[in-house]
Image (tube, rainbow, N blue to C red; front, side):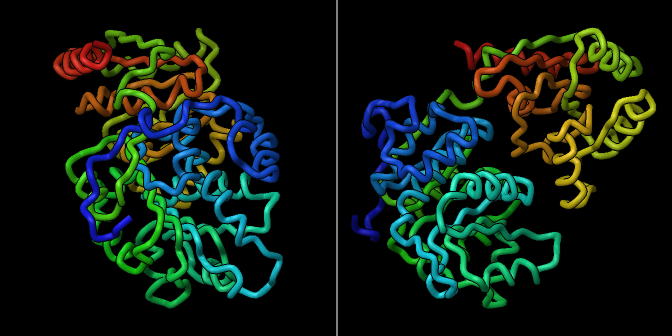
Length: 392
């Protein structure tokens, strides 16, 4: 492909890819990778894995329309690991382990989740994986980078810190993944992305994943992807059919008691409760604690380290209720979450879809309960219109 050509509109995966396969052992993956997938308890692909893996193995650039929880990390990491096995070697020399694949993620939490998944999939290989993000000391990260690493997962700001400190060289990068690209642009990372991409070889394979394809995302894709294949697994923002959605009329002062009552009546062991403000999150979390529920709050005033610890405790079952704002919850990947509550109705109907998408993942059932006061009527009307539009 000529790197100077303007890429055409993305071709559809349905037209360009082989028919979807459902078992990992039907894909052209090395036994070491298949073993790691099996260790994780997976034998069948998700739709995005079935569509994307053959396209990535074929060397094509990809625009993937997928949200967290669809299996997209495996959709890009397994084929990239497969392609990098040719570089696998037992040498202790850092020069023999240059960065071959760069994965950029918007937040520390997402970068850490991606890194844990990639490490799990590569554990039977000799490929090295590390993760760098802000909010912590650079020295341990620098030590890891100096040893040599084939797969580097990073947040843009911290990666630029390491580039400027000459801790990592990106001249041999062959594969780039922009994960949750829409969120990176929302946060304001576009200038950082442009700087990082300018340091990379022009001849490379680039994969972009985004929950939505705004004009800004399309412009980014046109600038940095070559004749990409569009991979879509569901209509964007479609509400999950396996999520039971309930709206209860409750006065504001009764909302907390209503949640506690529903949790006990339905024997719900864990849930996320969404609120619209950082102050509201902190107050509600303290109130739930007084009710005897083990609770943590996720909001923008929490440090990255605090948020990561709260999420880890929730995943270990040490926390019953996670009270979160929309910004803090974007990118969370929590398997088997039984319930989501909207304590505050979101101001944006699209945020409602993102919220309830935290439950009912991978075919499991879930419940999303919204507590509606008189002042919320207009907001719930917008949500009802959006749901009807998506289902039509």
